[in-house]
Image (cartoon, rainbow, N blue to C red; front, side, top):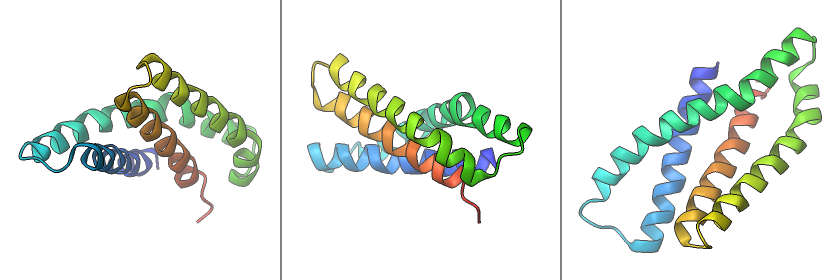
Length: 122
């Protein structure tokens, strides 16, 4: 379950990140190389972030016999506020440069979709 969610998150973060870069700078010759390198880096980051932040909540919920819906309803709002704060922090640390915004947007949306994918009842 964590592997499938991690892979989806890696693909989503790569797509978001590269679409934002291409919309900002346009399509260049080295875009394929950047796409490949960013996929590798974002895959590692996605799996690490999910393993360290979302998966422990998932494991705790199973030990307390909570349903996925109960966990999502109880913890998702706090998690989304935390990740929104982290995203704003990246933007602030970058001195409000576009790259910091790209990282923040990518982190936020990838984490939110990972929650939905991991705690989906289907």
